[in-house]
Image 1 (cartoon, rainbow, N blue to C red):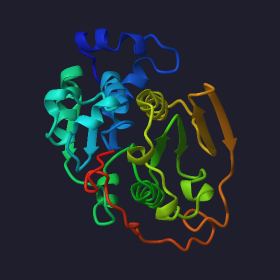
Image 2 (cartoon, rainbow, N blue to C red):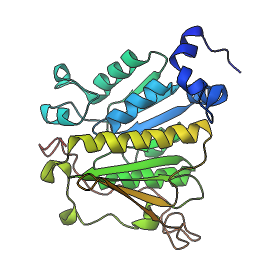
Image 3 (cartoon, one colour):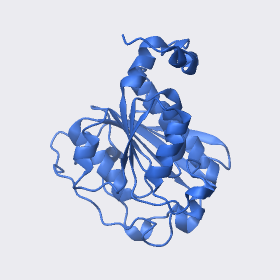
Length: 271
């Protein structure tokens, strides 16, 4: 075991005395590599809590810049950051919170050309994106590479969350194909309660920390949904689909395909 410094013993004390994590679990966190796809609404609480927990390396993928409309929910960024690349302001916030964390910045969007290369270098992937094209890229690349991930989504007053590890159901087991563009609602067109991002993002961070620390009770084979109006959680259990085009017994999806989309910033919406 690596000897923790006195500062680390103080910083991570509540983990070190926590049954189920302890010194061994904290050591795992300090050596882990997590890739965060999107440092906006969901990515903000994810990044802050993973940084506070002492994740060793945190990769940030986002090609967007901070806008005034982001600040209602994207708490990783501040008013002076408007106009700056999100990965730059996010990295500063993370390092200010915990200089133990190594931050790797990828100031571009995930694509079919770079997804496997980026994802392949990390232990756990967190999808904090705002579009189905990226969500399916994350899902497909992770399944192909045998990587664990958690995926979140928010809209209006609600959110949803699922986690995948190799051998469990993937996103396509539940939703085999992306919805038609005309059927998609985005936060930029229908709005979102800002605090929903915090609720779902912290849940994603929790799933990541449990996985890395060796706590095996995860939201696999499950879609967890939350509604803020009624303050109710609903859990929908499902199984890996043997006929899934990606992770089934005879997969038909063997190469990454990026579904056409325009990031909200390019549409002038800046979700």
